[in-house]
Image 1 (cartoon, rainbow, N blue to C red):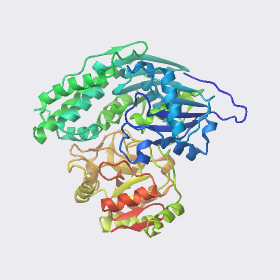
Image 2: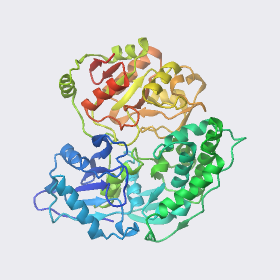
Image 3: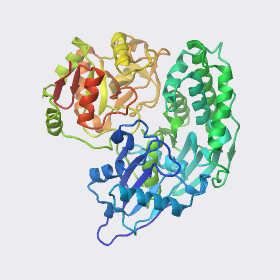
Image 4: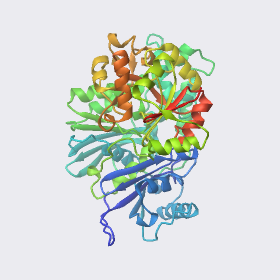
Length: 549
C-alpha cells in the first residue's frame, strides 16, 4: 500500500502512525515518519504510567511525537492506524473509526485538518513493515521474508510476507484456531501469571524437565491464503483462548508445584518453537533477510533457534525492538509511505531526549542534588559498594527492553547483587537478568547471534560463568545487548569500557528502570521517584550522579 502525496508549502511528507483505536486494547502508541525516516515513536504507557495502557488511546503519545519532531498537527499529511475495522467483527466501518479518531484527537486538543486522510493497514502487515524499518544499514532490502506471529490481530494470528524488488506478496495468513500466541498466553495463565507476563513463562521454561514434561499439543495448522476475513463475532478470540486455557489447566492445575509449572512452560515453549521452525522449513528459496515481529517474536529462546536457522541459510535476522503492538504505530506509518522498504529507524531511541543540564535542573526542583561523576568513579561505586544505579540518559527507548537509556545497572558477577535487584523490582527470585556489553566482550563470552536490542538468547562460554554469574540463567544462556553503532561513542559505552578496565570484562547488568507493575520511566521526574521508591543507591547519567541512599 502506498499513498503518494504532494504539498504546496513543504517538500516533506509527514505520516502519523497509530495503535490504540478500534481493535487495539493494549500497547497504544504513536509514531512519526517524515519522508523515509522514523523520527519518533512513543508508547502511551510511558506517559500515562499505566503499564501496557490497557484500553487507552494514544492521546498523550501523539502530541509527544509531534513535539519531538517539531511538527504541528496541521502539518500531518496522512494518519495510518494498524488495524482494519472491517475485519474486526464489531460492525464498524472505516468511516466510523475515522470519526472516532478525529473526535478523540479534537478532544485532546489535536486539531487534525479535515483534508488529512485517515487510512487503515492490516495489523500483521503493520508488524511486517515495523521489522523492515529496523533492517541495519548496509543490509540490502530488495528481498525480505517476514514472519509475523502473535495472539490475534483482527481475524488472524499471523502471516508470512515476501518482498521482492518492490512487490509485496502475503504467502499465507494464520487463523485464530492456529494461534501460537493464544496458546502461549493460555499456558501463561495456567502457570499462574497474568496476561502480558509471557516473558516469565519463557524464563521459567529453563527450569523444565524434558523427561517429565507432558507434550503440549500443537494447535491446528490454520493457514490460508487470500485477504483476511471478517470475524463472525468479536468474542471468537476469547473463545479460542478459553479452549486453550482448559487444555493447559489439565496439564498443570493452579495448585501444581514449581517443577510442574516449569514443565508446562517448557512444553509450550517447545511446541511453539517447533511450529515456527516448521513454517521456516517450508520457505522456498529464503531471502537474504528474515524479519520477525508480533508478540511471539519477543521470545528470546525461540529467536536463538531462528537465528541459527538464518545463519545456516546465509540470512540476516531482524527483530524490531517493539516487536509487540507498541511497534504497530511505526509499521502503520511505514506501510503507507511512498517507498516502505526505504523507511529507516536508525535506532530504538525514538522517545524524548534530555540534555544533562536539563536533567540536573529538573532533579534540583525535586530537591535532589546532582554532583559530577566520571565513568571510572561510577564503575567503582558499582563494584566497591555493590551499588544499584538507576541510569537515565539521552532519548528514551521504545519496546519492552531497557537498552541503556532508562535502565537499572549493577555489577554482573554477583548472584547476591542479582538477588537484591530482583527483590527491589518485585521480581521472582528465579528470573534471569541480562547484560549490556561491548562487541569485543560478546565475542569473548558468548556464542550465538549478536542483538543490539536484547532479543536473542546466547550460550555463555565457560570462561564467562564466574565474571558474568549475575546475568547467566540456569541453562547457561543470557540475552545480551551488544552496544554498538549509535551508542559506541556515548557515556554508556564509556561506562562499559571502565567496567572492562576494572574487571577485564566490558559488561554490566542492565534491567528495565521501573518498579513492579509500572512501565519503564520516561522523564527525569519519573526516574527520581522510581529510584527513591525502589531504594536504589544511585541515580546517574552523562556526567552526573545523585546519591539516593
